[in-house]
Structure formats: structure tokens, C-alpha cells
Image (cartoon, rainbow, N blue to C red; front, side, top):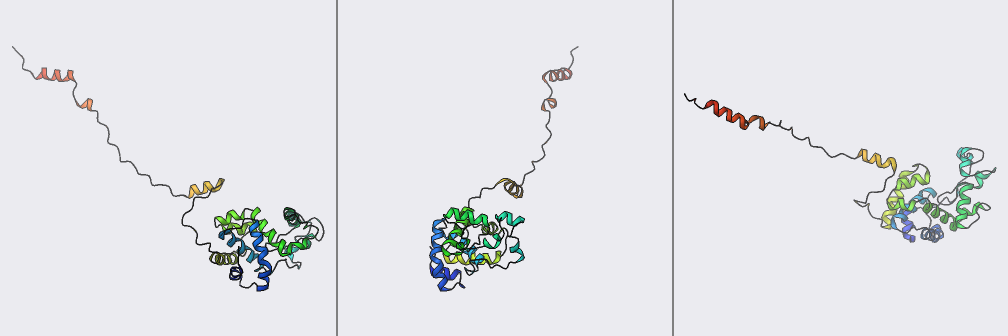
Length: 245
């Protein structure tokens, strides 16, 4: 479990009153969704710190901006988010420290938590719901396993869809590892299982062992041809013997 001094060191801009408000809900959500090691906790808290500006923004500020207008149907992004009704973009805007967005996600995570977020989407910003949805999203998307392998960039891509704000995220991650005692990366680990083209690429990139060229072979000599056969020896002796009168 995170302590107040630890959270303060990781998020120095978070006010004391907000730490007192959020910390119990943060710890409860982490325990419920197996974010229970130093490595998992460091990665989780670092990503949340960046996404929410150290828990200052638990709800997306609505403009609407040009990007936010794409949440509204019709449109490709609105369709992917499951927004089908006029006003769904604002109604189901990003909420919580990981900013779940869209009618589809509100329905999915609300159902998993046993909460009706479709009827009352504003509840997603309440601390007890906000941290629960963030931790559930984390666990259900396999981010605990990526955190175990210190694959922080892969976690960022799974959350963000890219690597936006990576330097800021890594700054929080490095700080959280020190504060939580996650330690340095091990020097050697068992090789991770690879899939498909990844395994082929790794095999092609691996240096191949040097092959030694065998020395040239000497031509074989026909020893049988070099030595006279028994009949030839006899003939030679006969030719060399003196003839009798």
C-alpha cells in the first residue's frame, strides 16, 4: 500500500487535502486489481500522474475543441467510442485518472463494477469510481504483466495509443521506482516469449557463429599403383637373373 509520504514524493504538486481524499480509494483499487508489487505500483501511479496532472484533472475540460468534436456522431471516432446519440461526446467525455471515454467504455467498465455509468456518467469522476475504473482498465488490458517486465513504453502505447508525453511519464516512473523501492532492472532475465514475426526478426538479427574453413585436402595417392604387384615383381626378378647357357 502507498503511504501519504510516498504519494507526496511521487506527486509533489498534489495538495495535502487531495492526498487525504484520494489515497484510500487509490489503495483500495490497487489491492482489488492485483497492482500489488513495487514494479506494478510504480508503473500504475506514474501513468496516472501524467494522465491526470497529479490528480488535478479528474474530468476532461470540455471546449469543445476540434478534437472533442470528433467524439460526436456521426464519425469514425464517435463510432469507435460507441457514441450514437447527439451530445454523447460531452456526456461521455474523459473522466477519472486514466480518462475513460465514450459510451462503450462507460457501459463496459460500469457493468464490470456493477455501477450504472450510462445513466449517470458524471459518477465516473467520483474518487471511489474513478480509481476503480482506472485499476480495472489496467488489469483487464494486461498492464500488470507488462509492468512486471518493465515494458513501460508498451504500457504507454496501450493507454495512449502512441507515446505522447513519454518523457514526462518516464520522469514519474523513475521517481516512483525510487520511492517504492522497485530497484534497478535485473541484469539478466529469462527470455520473453516471442510471437510470429518478432521471433523471426530476432533470429535474423542475432549474430551467427563464425564458421571455420576446413584446410584443403591432399589428393589421395594410389598406393596400389605405386607398388608393383606380385606378378610384376616376379617378372622383374626373372629379367634381372643371368641366363644359363
